[in-house]
Length: 100
Image (cartoon, rainbow, N blue to C red; front, top):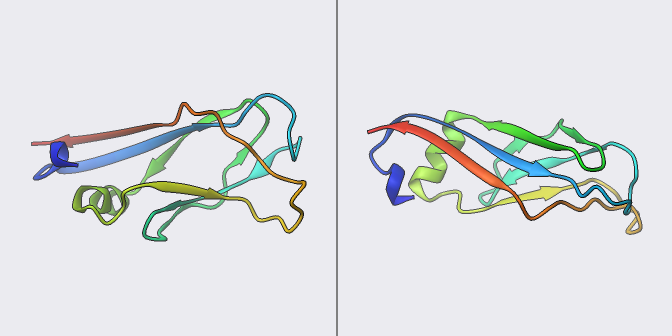
């Protein structure tokens, strides 16, 4: 966070990848990505098995990262059936660009 302190022209994106092995729900699954403060970042992206995607972050979300209001992200999948779940790889990436 200190690296982007005082930066302007903020933009960012986050990369997440679903596990490729069969688990929980085998078909495309729509996720909801949130910031630690409860900010909804994306609620419409669908992931198939093994699929990785970059999700763009709005400038307001990047500003919240800069200020420390967002310190982590979490994913929810709306299902009342515990046998239907989705798993992700541990290769998540956060990319932020800025001008100093």
